[in-house]
Length: 350
Image (cartoon, rainbow, N blue to C red; front, side, top):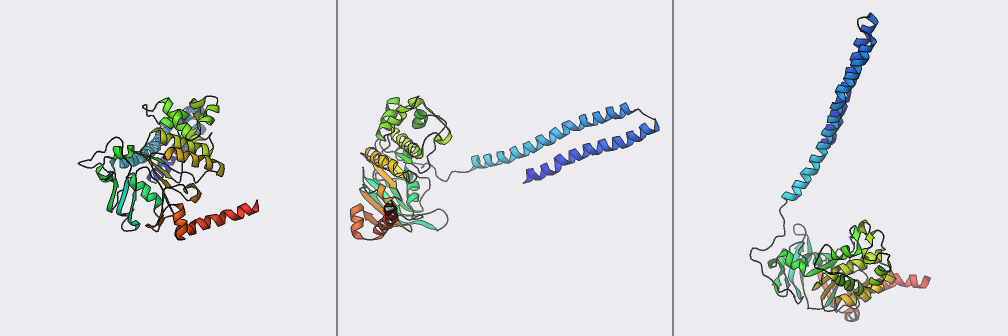
């Protein structure tokens, strides 16, 4: 706003002074020409000189506005650089082995983004090594918050979250996030070829590992059908790929880093039914031998999970596998019935 105000005053003021100088020159010079004191050529020459004099001043006024705009941007950049990180490495870190088992335990966890507006309230559960665990519930139940806490994007206020028996607040951030790969709902692909989008500048990942990851998620055949294969250039955000292909590519990216823990945060919510079947088959491949956490609204995508944790208003409402929860005829049963009713009219219409 300050830059806009200064530009609105400074630049028009210089222009006004220039035009005023020419007007005075024409008034005085015109009268002198009529009187015969000076010639018309002198008046024209001085008019040209005045314009030349004010032209650099107008350029300076424009540059001053650009400087003000740049200063606003610089202030924001320095504010960000000066911001003290809320999540920091522990003073005395505890290191885990290169290969972790993947056991995750929430013990009486309370969490709020601000004040005491609790998003999670006394949440406790244990995910055993190699299990596939799904989190379901209504919007705002706290599913995605659990995922963000495991990655330590935020710190909890009460309780503890443990990885293989060690509180994650005692593990260095780089080390903790090295064990975890996360696939989100919105996939970001960078300008570059397919291989570099899977590798993400990690030179330790070989071409053979990239191909292996693509085969696991059933996208290798499509990539090989492209004229340049894995060297095919992608536009910004992967504009030349379909939504399902982008999602499969994000799965391949996650697998290429060989994580012990895989997190899928609404990763199948934006894809069509045909691609969903491919993704479900891919999920069975990539979840084998590693702890997998899935946040989903579509209950059809998580029926194979070893354990389903049903969240409601920040609390664990029910736990069990798909058939156990249906047998309880509780909150999960109502969610399943609701989705089934939504699909039934569509089938009837066909």
